[in-house]
Length: 132
Image (cartoon, rainbow, N blue to C red):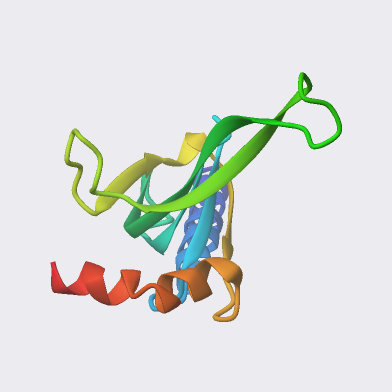
């Protein structure tokens, strides 16, 4: 019985260790949470209870009402998205977030040519982050 417990524990530990080995430390990841929020950044410590995300960005939606071209009284919602770097908010968070694994639906490695990574690079958000 003790041997079975030891084998099961070592199998679980090897699985968790492999999960962390698959991370590319220089890559950006998209992390999708159970509350519907998504964050983008560098991911680490995925095998721990709290996953660490650094160099964090997120999309912020702002709805605005605009008149339709067809009728002067018709209004339709238009959602504008802005890309925000964590740290500029009024409460002044640091550039690191520790996320409980139980709140993560999934995460995925972003390609260098993804629109998110491209936006960070084009707007010098990444170099601005490093210099602060």
